[in-house]
Amino acid sequence: MKKENTQDFGKRFHSGEMEYNIVDMSKILIIHTGGTIGMTRTADGYKPDGLYFREAIFHMDSLRAKGMPEWDFIECDPLLDSSQMSVKEWNIMGKLISENYESYDGFVVLHGTDTMAYSASALSFMLENLNKPVILTGSQIPLCETRSDGRDNLITSMIIAGEGKVKEVCIYFGGLLVRGNRATKYSAQDMQAFISPNYPILANAGLSIKYHRSAFLKQSEGEFHFRTFKDVPIGVIRVFPGIRFDLFESILTENLKGVVIETFGSGNVPDDNGVLISLLSKAKERGVVIVVCSQCLQATVDMSAYEAGSALRKAGAVSGRDMTSETAVTKLYYLFNRYDDTSQIKKLMEEDLRGELTV
Ligand code: ASP
Image 1 (cartoon, protein in one colour):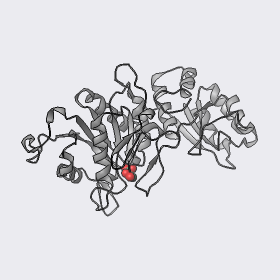
Image 2 (tube, rainbow, N blue to C red):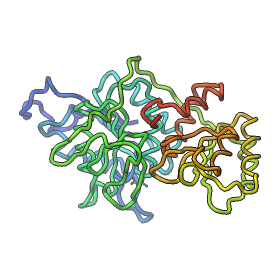
Image 3 (cartoon, helix red, strand yellow):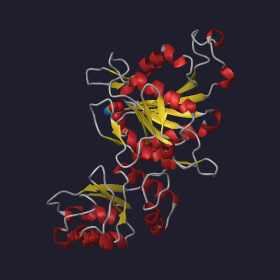
Image 4 (cartoon, rainbow, N blue to C red):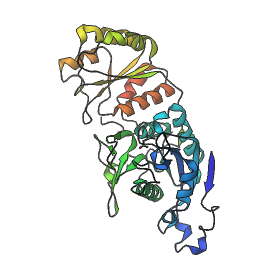
């Protein structure tokens, strides 16, 4: 882990050259985990390049312009394409934020877009009673390319983190600030890569940054606490017409502690001649927590709406309501790390803990 301090860097940063009052400045920590934003071209495609990125941002005058917060920078080692991230990296990010929590007013996490919604959701659960902004961002085009969207994403995220108005884990990308555990990556091409299908946007960054305060998370009173995750065997099954549930028997009933089933519409599944329900009943006896989410981006699971869904409820599945599948997965990690009692885990899966679902 290399930590750089803007104060220490070169000759560009002299308080005497600055026109603004340093006393009022907020200070943020930028954590670079990898992702397209800091990649350069190689013969095998884009790859994280810490040296390039560090030099690029330390030479960007706009990051020290009037109105920008003061910042420090931590580079994770190794820098990763976010497709390679796992519980281990979520723990590292959470630990970096928690160890530096008192020293900074906000945090910007630079991250690949592929699994940004998972990391943001995981952080939203790990960082209990969070009372500062944690903004994840990245880019679709690397900073080294002329048309990169990384510059705006970085600058605006820094401003949002420095302003400290929104005190929760968010993703800022392509002009939109969304709650991290409500976000899903929706485009691998558009500059607006993320949407928040079941919850309002927290801010729009156009000519100015317009915050939508009524959508902000209600702050909890408790003391900030960071909770690490241990690895838990969790699976996701996406149903499709003709799915043979018997092929999933051993993983469902022997290997997993939690399963997210991505169902059709509002929670409907093919019953596969009763195979699914008998499997789920076996899984339930073993204490497996089965969470029902929808394949539709915009949906609230209601297992009682159709006969094709009510069997799931009878077999002991819990409703993921309007949670994204990314959030259902990370919430399972969180709850299995916090509680031993599966009935408690099931109960809390259906409750709103961090603004991740609508009750
Ligand atoms: N594969 C990259 C990553 O997730 C994609 C990106 O950053 O946009 O790290």
